[in-house]
Length: 124
Ligand SMILES: [Ca+2]
Ligand SMILES: [Ca+2]
Figure 1 (tube, rainbow, N blue to C red):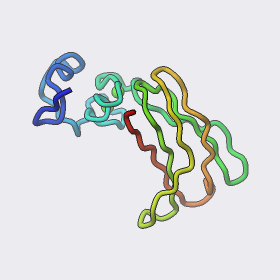
Figure 2: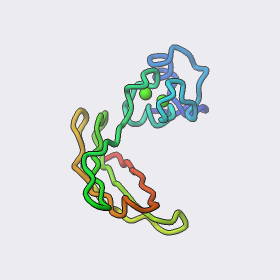
Figure 3: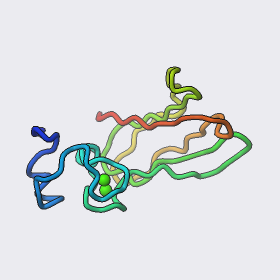
Figure 4: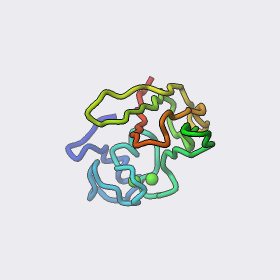
């Protein structure tokens, strides 16, 4: 899929937004996911309910368990953790998910302390 100067394919913009007025960094449905990511990950940029979710499943002591839901495109998902943003990220979970399914449960260490988490996505 060709990307255009605004980072979005024109046909995708017209199909989902009905205009070419937005660019890849805009978030017109205000769901926290920019248009560029919505187009790559298969979400609707005009629907705030159409977005990847990380849901809290359980808390046990200082560990929390989360899972990724509302997956819209097949790929590799890596959940990563660090306690200081100047340090490197440690992978705490990695799995493949197909569209419409839910990711594996991932236990997050040190959830009771100041910690940072991110999810990286990679196309197969
Ligand atoms: Ca959005
Ligand atoms: Ca959306």
